[in-house]
Length: 72
Image 1 (tube, helix red, strand yellow):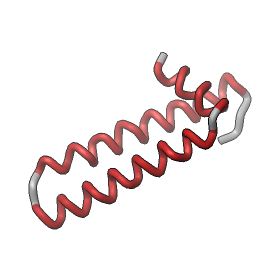
Image 2 (spheres, helix red, strand yellow):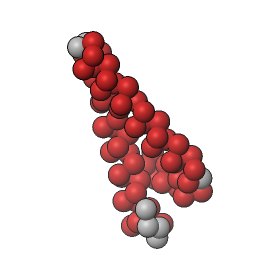
Image 3 (cartoon, helix red, strand yellow):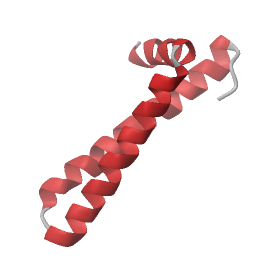
Image 4 (cartoon, one colour):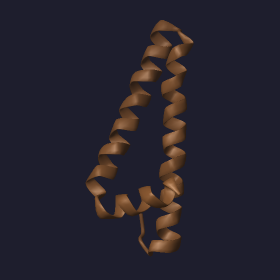
């Protein structure tokens, strides 16, 4: 259900979707840097967040192609 809503929202507001992608990329870069620099496992949460967000984006893209007729 969340995938369906995000897919519809990203079709209506594509700039919001692009900003979300940039924020997830920023979280990944900062988390990877801090993990390498400080060697503390707490920064793996940022990497895990990135993987979950990427899965959401992929599922929403698949939903858009299949049911909404949009090419991502």
